[in-house]
Image 1: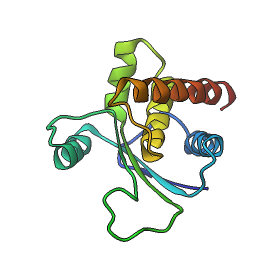
Image 2: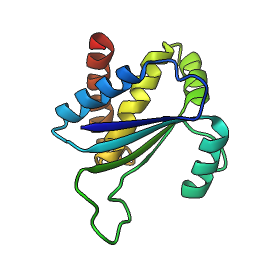
Image 3: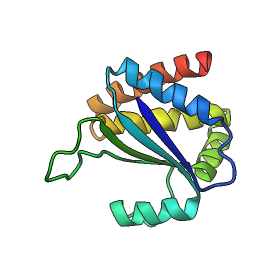
Image 4: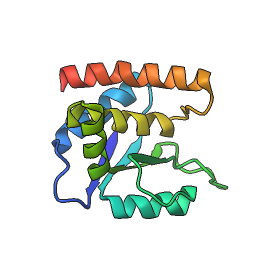
Amino acid sequence: MECNIYQSVKEIGVSKIFVKKTIAYLLKGLRKDGELSVHFIGDRKMRNLNAEHRGIHRSTDVLSFSAQEGSAVPLKHSDLGDIFISVPYIRRQAACWSVPYKEELTRMLIHGVLHNMGYDHKEEWQAKKMFELQERFLRKAVEHF
């Protein structure tokens, strides 16, 4: 497992080691291996990405881009894609939900990885499965790292 971390904001509020351990734990639990890139960004960049890829002209918490999505030529199997996390958005979201920032950041990191692994929450049955898995991994990650 390789986890590349990119940071375009001054501070992400958790250590890069924590991020890598969380990703490694999650991928092991999902029986996946490969290279994943996590980008910690600000609201402006997130707003631009959201507008470009989803047509929504506002920031959001997390965006996931699977390396296999929309690819005409199969990519190397180990490329798991990119996850973009808006640090300011997560800070506001944590305050809104009255949860610790680290918990909410971890939740959205897990959420992004699950999307890259093919999980979705468009339908009720999908949402139930994805959110149960997300919260199970979250409890373990917060307890152990």
